[in-house]
Length: 136
Image 1 (cartoon, one colour):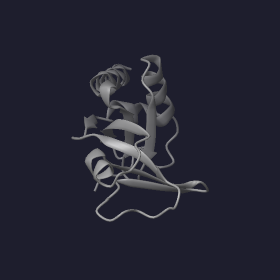
Image 2 (cartoon, one colour):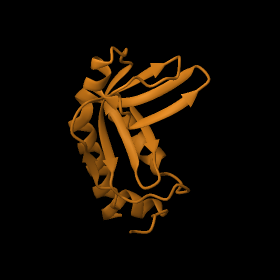
Image 3 (spheres, one colour):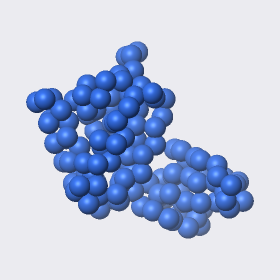
């Protein structure tokens, strides 16, 4: 298993963004109970309810109201949870390109959720950011 990376330049140079297949959606469940046959890839409990990130078809099949349709991009670098600046650098590059981004940091990788129609553009922006970091 690789060791987590914390140096920002190294993180950016080795982030290797990968577009996961499918469309993912954000849904909110005020009651906090996940319906049968819905297998979220991420959840977050807030006072107002439970947010799920789930494959779009599962949400549709369960009759859940979709808040945001997204493409899921994984930064393949094993990022240290205490690393400083990766989220800011990625968000700034995407914002400069007019792309909104929702970031989920997991134990091994960072995951970006961008509007589904912006997936290709977001990948190009991230790869350009990675190339610039490698040239520095």
